[in-house]
Image 1 (cartoon, rainbow, N blue to C red):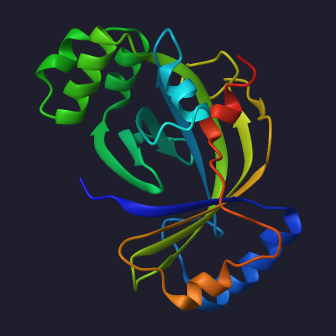
Image 2 (image 1 turned 135 degrees about the vertical axis):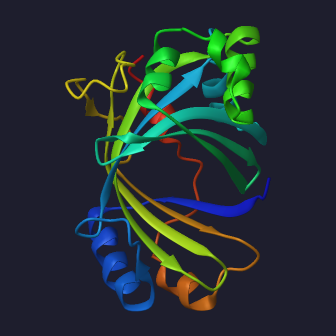
Image 3 (image 1 turned 120 degrees about the vertical axis):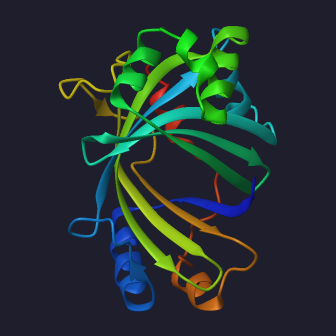
Length: 223
């Protein structure tokens, strides 16, 4: 598992417009976008004591969270992911699952997971049976991504963050979402060994600082 550096910043609408112009001049748009953006829908897991949420709010340095994610309402390509954090470093493990497998997890139909060929599916099975991890909330947002090859840099601007409240039916297009609490625009910068000066300069804005914002935590404020 390879860890990457990660910055997160809460920004304003005017900041977003400024950054968009800067990044379009120095970085490449992600080829997977349509019109420069794509939609992300994620389902996050937590245990009965809300350990994932509490560790985030308490600032625990080493932590992890599981989620199921797909893009642009396309359920033909679904990812099971584990995001691991160690201070300002982050790593992500991912495995493809089918819509049927995702629905089985939502329905708490778990035995098949023990025999999966995917190690990440088997790990989630263990934690759903031992730690009682369960689907907790849906998080929707729009992402505007940019890439810069040197340093393997990825810069994203996330906005229109919405929560599914108590809805955990990830595959239901009619699941009602509402705006999440807290900041509505988040800048994220991720890189490997070094952050090139041209990108470091492009993302510098007056009055912003790195924060520990979590979309999952913001979407859990309603329940």
